Image 1 (tube, rainbow, N blue to C red):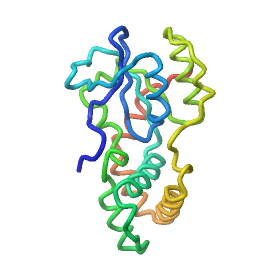
Image 2: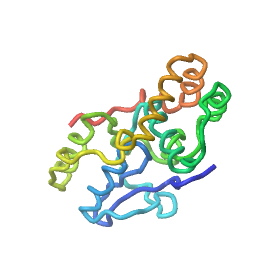
Image 3: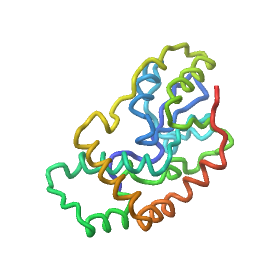
Image 4: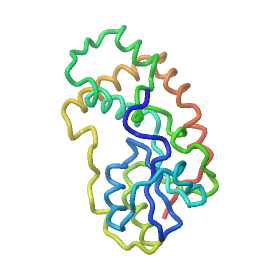
Length: 199
């Protein structure tokens, strides 16, 4: 089941009480290079015992993340197969739902963290601006809000087509949509329970 990401992956620096917890498909390809500018390195908060650090966490709408994630999964691991987009194919996809780290529940990446010791960011058009403000306010002056996102689905014709196909099918079929909402119910509960950074 596990492909790519290992639970607990994060970035931090020995001189800070902050750590960034990486959740794939939540602007991580934009965030990680900006933190490397400040000498932040890769850690695992489980194996490196960083539970005491204040965690920076980016959450995203579960369905939008899944649509981006399933397109990423197929182009990463199955780009050479010919897909027959018939009802049986979609039944399998929407029955399984999670295939790798890009499509799994976001809450799984936060296991054993004290959610009261976290700053949450919402992954939307304001994320770059708000994350930049947070860094500025914590001694890391920057102009990262000017940098464009990387590795978005629209950068690849294949990913864009897959995302559009899955989106059209999903929102045309209440059974599939309900399957996703049920599978990601814990993510929705988490999103409703936290306060997001507003600058």
